Every structure is written in structure tokens, then in C-alpha cells.
Image 1 (tube, rainbow, N blue to C red):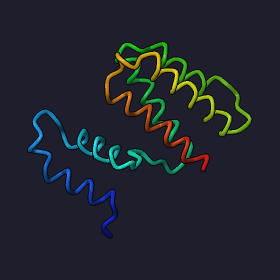
Image 2 (cartoon, rainbow, N blue to C red):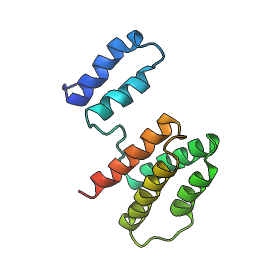
Image 3 (cartoon, one colour):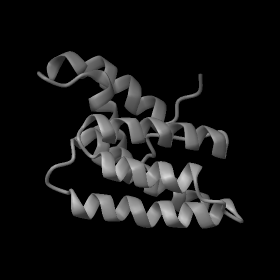
Image 4 (cartoon, one colour):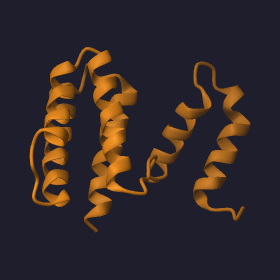
Length: 126
């Protein structure tokens, strides 16, 4: 495997994971890759992204944010979109609203996930 900034970050974090009490390797990788500006998620297709959003919806619901989860599910499964860009734009707006409305109460992994999804959408538009 060729060394890339992502591979080096993951490898170095695995080696010091035991030194950080209370943090597992996934938490350290997420923190370190976000600090470096590297996307945590990448998707091979829109369908794979939608599957991730279904998991995010479930996480929101399980964490007590069922209204936010229902809004995401509605946009993905109930609205007929003419283009994926139109859907992505609406999702981006909704993700920002959720982050702003629940900024102090969202669990960090959900907040990070929403931020990552916004970055994925922004990257798709470049």
C-alpha cells in the first residue's frame, strides 16, 4: 500500500490509541482526519450515500432527535426530485439547520457526521 496522508494518519493513530484514555481508535481517527481536513466518509455512489443517511436517521432517532431524523427520511424517500443536485442542496440546508438548532445537545458523533455529510455534498459540487 502506498503511503498517503490518510494512511499515515490512520496508522499513526492506531499506534497511539492506547495512550489516550477514553478514546477508541475510530474516535481518534475521526478527530485526526477532521483536524487535517480529510473527509471521514467517501461514497462510491449516491445509493451508498443514501444508505449512510438512513443510518444517520436511525442514530438521530435513537438519540432523541426523531423529528430531525424524520425530516431527512422524508427528503430522501418521500419527495420526487428532478436531480440529485436538488436533493443534495435541500439536504445540505437541513443538515445546517439541525446543527444550528441542536448545537448544544447533539452527541458529538452525530454532529461530526452531519458536518461530514455537508463536506461530501460540497465536494460533489466542485
